[in-house]
Length: 188
Image (tube, rainbow, N blue to C red; front, side):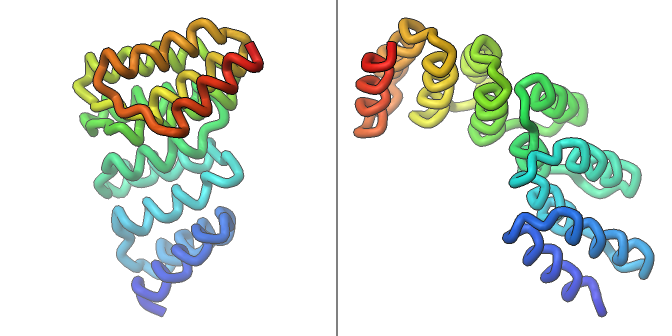
């Protein structure tokens, strides 16, 4: 087998969420001294998302550093999507900054989703505010994610204020936005 065949196998594992099998193929590549690329690792890290296997994703980031394989925004985003709490996602975000890899809108969305999962609505709010400081464009989904985090934990007034802030910040409001507002008011 060559690197292309292994990459195809790892991609197949990623699509089905089979992180352990993807890792097995990656380790086989190491054992057979086949070249691993950023793409190989990105796909392997993405295979960790479904099972929220953030420890494995973090280890893969470390492996990439040791092998001097470039870690890019997509690599870190995949690792953040594997996180099950905002606290863990923030650690990956900090590592990203330390390694001088710029985050994007997806980076912040993924981190906010981890905050929702981890019951950390205040952290989601801080992330939304820090997007402007970091010169990362926020969008409808980032606002809705932060509003969802607030609403989930009974902070419906904050959630409604976020939806109102969208107009002030020239963020497009769509059917999903208005549906979210109705839901928030109904539950709140």
